[in-house]
Amino acid sequence: MRKMRKFNKKSFLVFGVCVFLLGITGFVITRLKCFHSNGIDAEGSSLSDEDLFHSYCDYAVNFMTYVLESDDKIADCEINVSYSNEEILSVTAEIVLTAQNTENEIQSDKIADYISQTLDIPTEKIAISIH
View 1: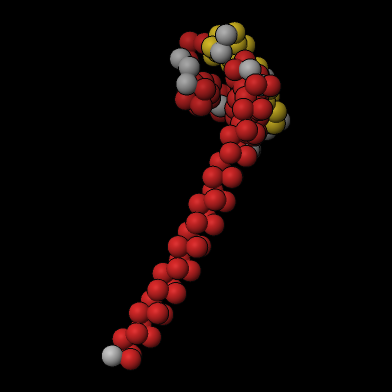
View 2: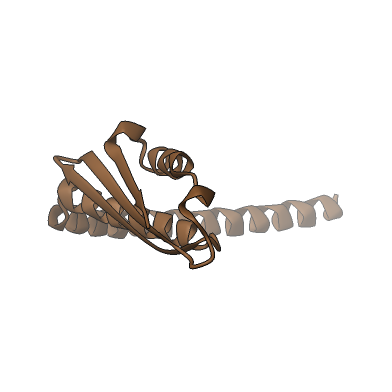
């Protein structure tokens, strides 16, 4: 009987500590959500959808340029995106080949497909010039 009381007191103490820790955790989480949502509201009010789309296009262009220039046949790549009202109107890509490569070694349709898939636009909106 005596052993049973210690077990009950011990269980009660462990249960109390768990409830206390859960309470503190819940308090911290609600404070973080409140802080985080205030930060998002402040950011959201200063950035327009057009600014976010512009940032997305810049990021995509930088990424595609990096990937294309990592090909040892391409010396330089410049990609320009023309857009309006969060819609991509056209893309131009100027590819400069390394000295030892010819224009026949690069397939412009594969580059157009890559850009098309990355930006989720039809290939008809993409113009590629290879030098």
